[in-house]
View (cartoon, one colour):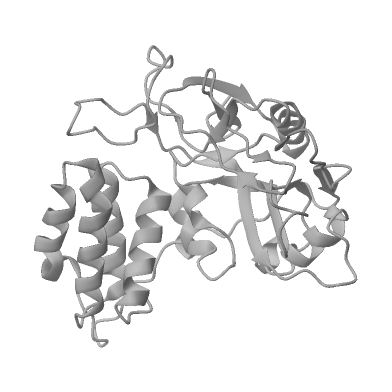
Length: 315
């Protein structure tokens, strides 16, 4: 089993890693889980990945991440850490590795009136059309998220097999203009796999939550040179972000109290929105500083986006 062809499963004993649907239609979020047992499972192709997903659909205490265990001897009752926690001294438990498999979160995508939410293949076709050309003829495993069929629009997770292993940074650049949630490309970001739990009086509007779109066995991935930001030519003006916001970065990195980290990040991003600098680079630097301080990738990205919008920026 190679790192590229394996999946890291996280199990939170006694915790509910699935959304719950109440009789009145209320959707109750995931239970908070801070410690997990880590497992690795081999997946040789999309078919094997689909089999694993069907198993995990029934496990409301499990989820997966793109990273792999940092230390084989430390996989029981551990936190989800890519970086050392300065506050507690806890060491990283996950490291990033290139993977052949890919999960794409599609959310808030308009669904044509002629397509029923229960038609997962029809909904998937609409979503796939939004992806780059390399994805158009590929096979997918399609999984409905907890909100699909209960909230408006198309809300799916598309799973694909890639022609070569890729890391999260390549995926974020490749799919930067695609309507997907790029936070799940992070090595420690949770990817939920369990079907929702329907309480008495509620019902699942979908007869099936996983299906397969037939097609080519893998997505042809562009060469590495095409999946990294292009360097600007010497003749073009280039606004360096990091040197101008080093003080803001220190403020975010040194926010030791958990409740203050989001506030510090939001404040710093608002200051960036007021500055004449490369906001994309600055946002990236702030997000990484927040992650080092203890925020998740998803939380850091969401806070920076919100601050830039409120501050008048569109980076």
